[in-house]
Image (cartoon, rainbow over the protein chains, first blue to last red):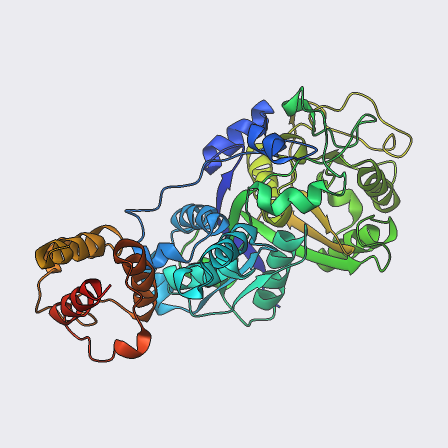
Length: 407
Length: 82
């Protein structure tokens, strides 16, 4: 079986628009969460959100390339450009080789709202224009990037709620491992706007600590009161070891194992069994024991139930001798469809820079989370292997084990 | 609106909205081959022309519109018949 490696990464995040800035933010424990007055004016219960500015792509891409791209495809384009650049992959390589794309995304609200608003106002679909249909589909990111980069391999979007980005990497890993593709551009993208989060705010799921935005996202803390929505995009270039070696690429990490499961219970409340099975499966796939994991990047979104159940699941799998745990969502907020991919980028940056980023805002445990060994401050630490969790609505679970290359 | 105003406006919209290279704009230019206006661009042109001239283009009338001059003539006739 082929071994699967990461040869490039790129990020467009609320904590940095490139890898260097993100690494710095992770190390400094810098939050990307703000209070958005526009949401308050619209009637949101919580106006908290991660925020990143829209990239300006005029000049970089021609109009036809741009017109079908919603904001999350623009973020993904930026992240993918960085990833391809630092993997040493140029357009010539993409033209000569079958390279695929599997990107995580699970919504595209604004284009649907805007195009239907035009229809309602004008009563004529001929005034909608050519871009909205491509912007409106869940597969908008993979669709657009495959055209922009002229990709000719596998091409679709993975939608698994807040596990989308992680599952995209997992499926790509399986395809490459199976010898079906040599290189796949993977990632996750998430739109940032009120339209896509209004119905999520309706669940009372967001933190209302509006007086102190950077302290609102507090995974595992006793006083956590909900998640903070966020977004952006992250790209990871997955490749077979043989392909990486053949072109002399620098190997950043190895994807050692992918585990998945479904809870089979509640649509929004997670359980313990599903996540535990996904973690165990990823360790088994990697041929590793729990004692070989040096860091767990938790899914923990700062929700009362979710964080508690994940803590119990981690304890079930890793026991008292668990490695250090942190949730980078304490800084970024919940990046949703981007999260699984971005957290692989964040954790790989930590692994390759020998530190664990802090789980911000942890002041007190509660009975469910007191079992955890949390990194509450930036912790210098050698990480040879980490495990990254992503869980989503519908009970979808994804766990990835990633380790330092040893070839 | 005078004919030359209409032509100048069409040219400006092609450059600013469809982002066609200004140097390529000439009445003899073939819309598809020289200006590279494809079927999706035509969809956007429908919107742009309606918003700027109040003219509703019809796709079935586009089959004989090959050159930029054909396009000018098509729009001019419809502007004057509003």
